Length: 383
Ligand code: SOE
Image (cartoon, rainbow, N blue to C red; front, side, top):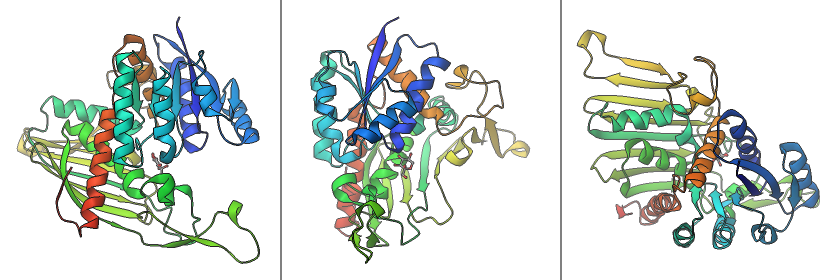
């Protein structure tokens, strides 16, 4: 069987999650090609060597440029903070590698445009690319999209999406890279709002065309991380991104979508919800209850109407063929295995996988429209 030698650039939280996907997908699904975890790359030699050992990468390295240029590498998986996505992904694509890039695609529209152009050039030479929006690969999310496509909720009039976390409610939470514009581009808006936008566009099959919104930084000054503290007094730094974003999107179908992305939803740990309201029915997805999809069927007899809880664990449900019997639940990490499955199958068949860099670019345009609207005191802005 053809092997696909993989290089992963980065080794933080997403490095751990992607490693789980690369390790597990070939063992649980009958893939047409065999991904090999060849090399993991990070700046600190000792730390990245430990990560290679822990997560099952054959080698570790500290120079991503050298690794991306290696002839024996087929796939480059970019899991660094958004500030380095454009440079690494473009170099890998120009070197003829297939590229998986974490979300959001980039920190700016300009960077995302250059990445989408590089992806188009590379695709003409047979090198494919994909953006790491894994929540669309939770079986219940893919089922939601299938039910919408089959007309089960009818014409969609309104959508609600929220992604709520609370890890910044503590004003002493340190100034991590996700709180600095030069590394993250934006705060909750790009980090988790991007997921909400991708999920709404994926499930409805529509795109956000206009947006108006507000962004807010609640805690403007935070202690530097312990590793950057020097001397007796606690040093602090400025937060240069949003803690929360509230925005409205107009879909190209005319439907209105309300979005919330916040790191200040006290008690909410990783609560991504999407509700779709149509003329014939409704769907409700909750990441914190990810093995279930709630479905309301207005065409059911009046005395039997109500939100039903579909248990998305049947072999016929998306991706479940690779896992367990009905009722044996999946978790957060399975979306990363599904991501590897879809990427490897796309590479083997030469079929560009989704979401493409062009789709990632559109999400970036939506985020940018929200920021432009917020900067103009939230007037409506064309995406
Ligand atoms: C933020 O804490 C975060 O790790 C995001 O960066 C991820 O994209 C999201 O899946 C989980 O939360």
